[in-house]
Image (tube, rainbow over all chains, first blue to last red; front, side, top):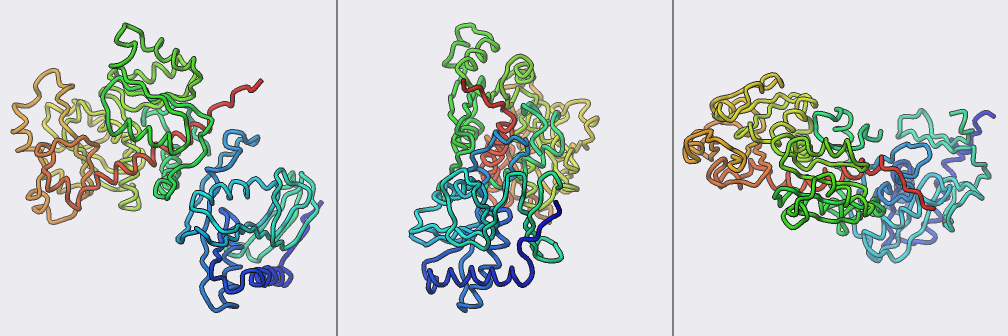
Length: 184
Length: 312
């Protein structure tokens, strides 16, 4: 099976702008709302969303980065023996009583989001926590976790993998691909 | 990459790549220990014994904080209040501790090579927290971390280690670590306190402290270890302070800024005067802070290599 393109170009642009509009619908003027991108790949999506929100609302929206490595439940338990490398956590604001929107590129088993919620609580008690993802892989959750804002839902099988490429990472264009794991 | 080793016995045995891996991970943990809640759950299923056969304040507290901030279970053991006083051997003591399902041992021991011996005979991760006059790897790691943090690099930085080189495990571990990462290293002190073959490690020897300080970017100043000196190596501490002590006057005569490191404990007025120890040149307390981050990184990365027990 060749790579299947899930989102790119104009369609991706429309999706990002729709997600931003949905956020605005629920969060009004973003007085008490903060965005948190999940490291390592959710931060690119978070930066895009922040940019769209800032231009639409004509104000700076607070954005932080959260690394979940030390909160993961597969430390010492990974089948591929690939070690977990930590990235930077940078939350330059208080989250106490804030409405937090967690942002990640792909929602798959839900374990990263579970780790992110544990990590997040160490910084204070947010009023609410929501989840925004670009790609939701259906029927593959290990935990009872669902996203509030979804770019695109995709029906996938375990042997497939979603690859997200952003210009910010050095790719020529933004592309979201679905590929077979053994073809990587 | 995971660390290529199960133990941290000395800097001599670990690769340059492992050192960088530890330094990079420590950056993340330094951020963790500056959070409002300075704790992560990574090592919650690991038990660590701190076994200290020699006195220590900084290292023991630093290791214990590092362990607790990784959520490990911690037991402490000091030789003076234990069965060692009743004649138990080292191996028996450790095997008894391990029989209580301990995964890692952090050990300080007065005999050089004691942790290497243990690593050979017991089935647990061993971390050397200082073995006699041999090595003190985590101290060297936190020293290179502090230098890297200050200068943004280690390659080409000139570091002089001043003082009792002969009896210092900090000196030896520092030389190995700095050389592996590409720094230039020199030592300075009374020749009676400098090992004869030190130049085979590729370090310069300075006899005069002023020359050494003029040459270096960083001075790592050590304590005179009177408790380890079996023969008198110099006439008096007063004379040592006069010839090798670093004071404000000496520093200002250099017309350049150098960084002062000290592994502690300081003997104020001997190797460093108070106005130097407390000056903006000195990063002694930052070293202590970095020590916790480095030890968290070492424990975290070594824990990754521990097999998960059977749950049947």
